[in-house]
Image (cartoon, rainbow over all chains, first blue to last red; front, side, top):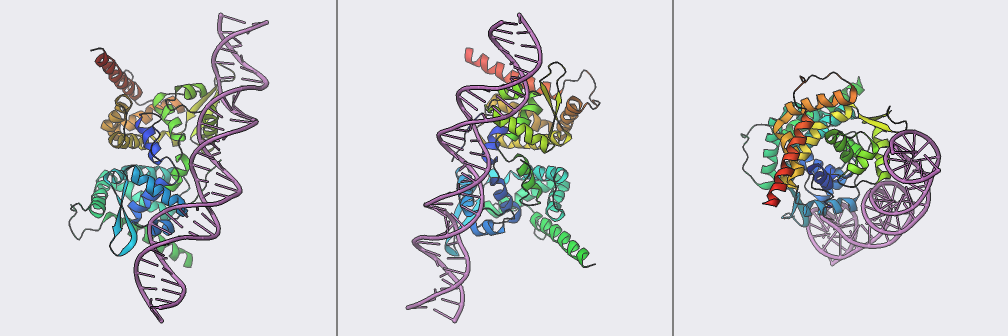
Length: 172
Length: 172
DNA sequence: TGCAACTGATTGCAAATTGCAATCGGATAG
DNA sequence: CTATCCGATTGCAATTTGCAATCAGTTGCA
């Protein structure tokens, strides 16, 4: 379940952490979708992950230090998964991955608007987002002034605007 | 052999392209190691890729539009693999991946010096590197003035300096 | 109290993937 | 003529994957 260590190359080691078809998808849903529970990840996933794979990957990501698990006070057997700093710093990678995919692959418009926004915002926006994630997941004090829309809200709003516009276009 | 299209999300689609343990390793060796031939990739790989996996991935990367193959004029049955623009624009992703791995994973010093250099150089260095790759692989005119050391040369020199220093340290 | 819905998983199993070893036919060098 | 190198291909055992069904415990509601 742990790492292979085929070599000490940073790219190789990174691939050994999330060089599979699901790990980054789960992290994406937690980071951008704000999901924290098993069921949210299971049912909310566009790609339709199976429950055993999800359980396996969550365990693996915990062992690797990318996630932690805590009891949910509202429900005795509910668990809350949190991102660690290690996972939060994946934001630039996800942003680049999204930017690349948006250019070269057959993405859908509503799902790529977030990647576009994140790309346009660049490192300053990524930093703000990571700050918000640290606040949400690690309890760190937030540096963003209250009243400012969060990055996730901005991404969500942009996504919904596209969906609304497309629905409109269908009616016309 | 082609793509699944579990969803139109750019991150998902990117993962479907190189969300496996070998595709990015091959591209890394071509991009940073300058390897162009089957045997170079097979024997030069630190991670020890098997020949059938290499053949399979090369074929897949060609189908996906990341590589092209051409005859080597010096040897009738030798093939030269070239990066396409699609693959060349992976440089920022590889740089981020290397930067992240360098921080969070048990990398070795000599193998991570290149990631460090690439991180410090930032987007301007990435652009220069991509320009050089376009020159090498696509025959594009090089914008870098002659006499300037290429990025690959810089990376190689840094790597060799670390190796030499470590060898020295062992002697002492 | 009874029961349905929901919680985070686990198990069985068939199918696909992986990667090692051996081998292929052709090309080239000595 | 022979040894070596070329980009693969094949056979095969081991592992991994992912779908379907199921688990035991928890909660909300009647």
